[in-house]
Structures are given as structure tokens and as C-alpha cells.
Image (tube, rainbow, N blue to C red; front, top):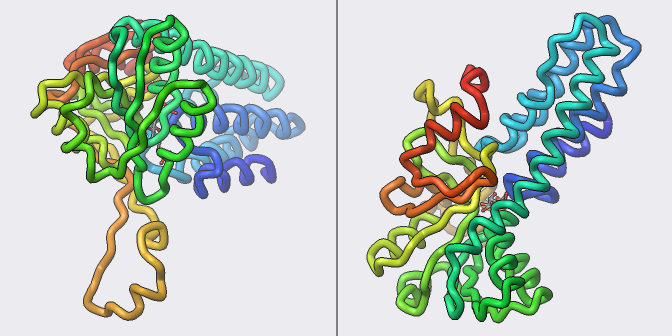
Length: 306
Ligand code: RUB
């Protein structure tokens, strides 16, 4: 359980972060944990596996990639532990390989939407969104990026470093400059933590203000999302929970102690309605948000909803 707890802690503290990386790390941790249980009877094996799955899923509530990867990894129909471990190992290898390949496919499909000379705005740090941007650059398109700081954790700094190292001209702005700068932008490309059955996008706090500003300025918003970022449980009416993180990320505790009448909130994600999204780029194709149900049904399976 040690390694599994270590991975869970790294996800909780955001040492491992980003919906895709979280999903891959959780799948690998569950696979390794299952392998460590080979001497147990099946009933005990199953109980421990369920408890481990819960430990991983409970680390962060918003990115549906996490429960999806855990559910796809842990399922087995074996009648003995040896076969169960084989199935789980196979599930994990398949999930991790698909996740890696998905990034390349999303890059190639999404890059078709980027034209020579485009200025792209992005938010936070999304590997899927960056895959589109980098692929367009690799194709020789003369592009540049405007990247937001993404308060409070400032994941925008990871994005600007990655773009800088790739040689892509990049401008960093504070989150509140989004609307002013939007007139200089050709399209917005962001990632996803979850996409619900009504096509709404749940992503880093502030994403919806990029989308609204883009809508107002008649710029397209493209979402880069692997199919495992769609939420099957929203089919049953479940809402995606928005993670509230520690207020220490926002304000110094000492300053707050001197302000007894002030409350601070730190929601980590927000919801962008489908009408502000033009296209969701997945590894199996580009879909309008209205097709979220089809993606869930055909590429994740309705059994994940229960
Ligand atoms: C990261 C974030 C990213 C998505 C998609 O939030 O909102 O846009 O997770 O990322 P946090 P990716 O930093 O709180 O995890 O495309 O890499 O999966």
C-alpha cells in the first residue's frame, strides 16, 4: 500500500497534476498494488483493491479522468487472483498506452484547425492543448501563444516554460487581462478535467471567462480532451464536483488573521457551458459538444455510469 499511498499523496498535493497525468499515474499505481496482493484469497484481494481504488479516487474530486482510469483498470471477471492480476495488468497497460497515443492523435486532429499566422490563447497547463499547439508549430505554421498566469497555483508558468523550450513565441498575461487581449487572438485552445453529457466543460478556474470573452469577440474555442475525460456518471444526473482547495493558495494566513470579517474562497475549476465551445478534439475525432452522449456511449461504455 506504500507506493499507492505515495501516488495518492502526490496527486492530492498536485506534485502529479493535470487530468491526463493523474489518470495515468493512478492506473499504474493500482496495477502495481494489485501485483503486490498475489498471495491473498480472491475475496480479500477484491476488498483491498476496492479500498485502494477509493483512496486514489478520493484524492481530487473534479477530474473525471481519475475515476474513469481507476474503473477501467480495476475491472476483472477472474475467479482466481492470478487471473485477476493478469486482467488488471492488461487493463493498465492498455489504458496507459491509449492515453499516450491519444495525445499525439489529438495534436494531429487539432492542428488542422490552426492556420498559419494564428495567435492562440490558452489557460493553465494542459498537455492535450499543448499537443495541438506544438503539432501546428511542427507543421511549420507561424503561430504564437498568449498564455494566462492561471492563479492561484500559476500553472501558466509551466506552460510558458514548455512553449519557450519548444521555440514557440509566447506572451504571458495575468488572468484578468483575458478580455482586453482577446481582440488580438484568433482562437482559444484549452484542456479539460471533465466534460459532462450536456457538453459542458469543467476545467481550471477562469476557463469560462476565456470562453465568454472569446464568444463575445466571435473567436472559436477548441477543447482538447481524451475520451476518458468525458463523465459517464453525468448521464445519471450526477454533477461534477468543483474542488475547493486550501485558501493558503490564495492569501497569506497572517494577512487573513488581521481581517476577521473576511472570508476567502478558492474554487479550483469552473464550468463552461456547451454554447461557448465550438469543438472538442478527442483522439477519435473532433466533435461538437452536443455529441458528448455519443462519445460516452461509444468510447467509454454506459457501464461506467453505475
Ligand atoms: C489542470 C487543468 C488542465 C486539465 C487538462 O488543473 O485544469 O487544463 O487538467 O490537462 P490542475 P491535461 O493543475 O489543478 O490539475 O490536458 O494535461 O490532462
